[in-house]
Image 1: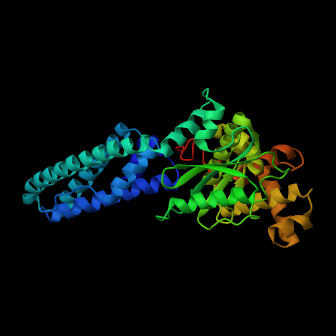
Image 2: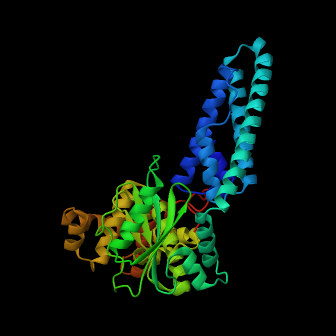
Image 3: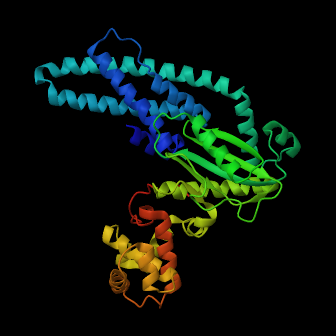
Length: 391
């Protein structure tokens, strides 16, 4: 049900965090409907998990009409499943009565459920729009949208110096498990402080994500250290933009952080907790038009673009071999295999390419780099449904 709703209504958001919020609400609603079916004395159709998701929708800007449409889609899915079970499990002579009972119960359930959800949405919306957090978020969104703002007034509202140099972060939970968003905030601020930021700004985005900025008068040449050099708690992922100056730089580094986050979410790596835009910029540019990027990969790599473990081994070995100046020894050290294994894999990869690897070295290296960053998302056939995050 959650998969169907998120597919039909993109406003609910992509990624594991927004999906988990939606899934908790749909699962709790189905369990409550089953209880009401067994025990008609249970009169409250709403669940705390659904209300929690309702509040999250408000804070992420999901419109009420989309929330209500999601509820109607859920009702349709529940009705279909219950009726199909009735046809399978109930003797033929009892089915008409049981189906009438099911229809009545589901109507009573969804009527009460949708009423509670609408009431809570409007109440949370009133609370949210009058809060300081909403005012700060509105100011940040106005800046990001390129609206004309009084920079000094905005800086006072945000308690953050906008005229200096900035580095932006996008942060999210790798595996949402009910962990407090305060932990995400502490991780983002701690990382920025570790990068020597003298001021920070954090804007929560729903329960499972946030945007953050760090600033100082002038960043060092290597403002964001290499991934792994600053500790980040397990289950938290960060994506960083490059240094930007002033209001324009505030927007630029944020856009880069979002791009880095989308590529990281398209190809999650458990050993990579921090992704820097500088490290994936080429892949971000190449994948701006993902269908065309996939066609490029298919043309350049041919059978090497297969979604198999063997093809992945050949691609990775060939990538290291070319990056090391065609050194078998260096490639063997980097891939942790024997030199003869590298030689065999390179020969096999060249056979699959159908030409000497030096003939189109630039194109081949570019394609291999793109696959390395995007992972399986880059190899999805162009005719398959687009399931990767929107670029």
